[in-house]
Image (tube, rainbow, N blue to C red; front, side, top):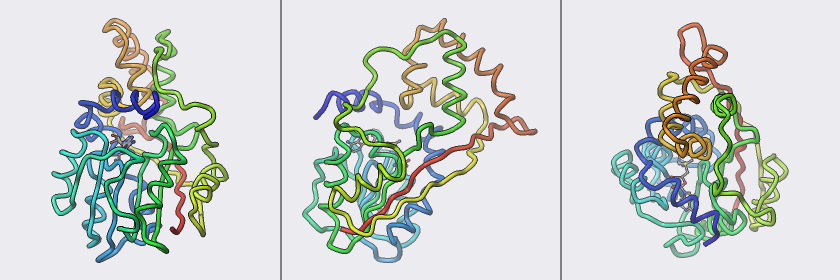
Length: 268
Ligand SMILES: C[S@@+](CC[C@H](N)C(=O)[O-])C[C@H]1O[C@@H](n2cnc3c(N)ncnc32)[C@H](O)[C@@H]1O
């Protein structure tokens, strides 16, 4: 396990509810396209890796798939069990997946490969548990990811807050370009064939307090930047955030946040 993975474990620990109530709603936009790319339908044996609060697992169950799901964080697995009661949910940490080679028709990971210390090993692990000819489909964020992160970054910067030391940073040797070519190479390099990659763009609409709530609770790297500050600094960031919100809001006051992700899929 790399230092990056250790830091990721700490970031997610105890934050399952805060994730479900904020950023999980953002991650949900890619789920239909992800499941289409994985060929998920009635009877598909599907594994959702890094299931979080269970959005993908629940959607796959609704399509009639036979779903297993894993997450590294026990609190996430507990929420996923509630969201997808028909799925078999367990705790497991990529790249160590507790399934025999070739168990699944389809393996998916929605915004997970960007949270592992060794992305190439992780994709190889997804491929290993997929049957020959089965689908592997993953999403990651583009860099930059979208307006919601820009809003929070700007608020932190206007409040004079720096990124705290000790936040996870992928070793350059393990990183890959977060563009279509980089993600395609990552999947091909793990032995997947017929790899395709597309960009997904959408507007995430969220109440300003909901969007702030996830970050203030420490969800994600931007949340860690904000949540690790002293209370006085957090309140300065919030003041800057409130001042910036109208730039990102529609006429009804809801945030309208443009986001960009990459969806890649291949065959084992
Ligand atoms: C951004 S969330 C995405 C959750 C979910 N896929 C969704 O779309 O809502 C990332 C999830 O990956 C999990 N995760 C991070 N690293 C992992 C690893 N090495 N193995 C398994 N799960 C991991 C985290 O605990 C977290 O639940």
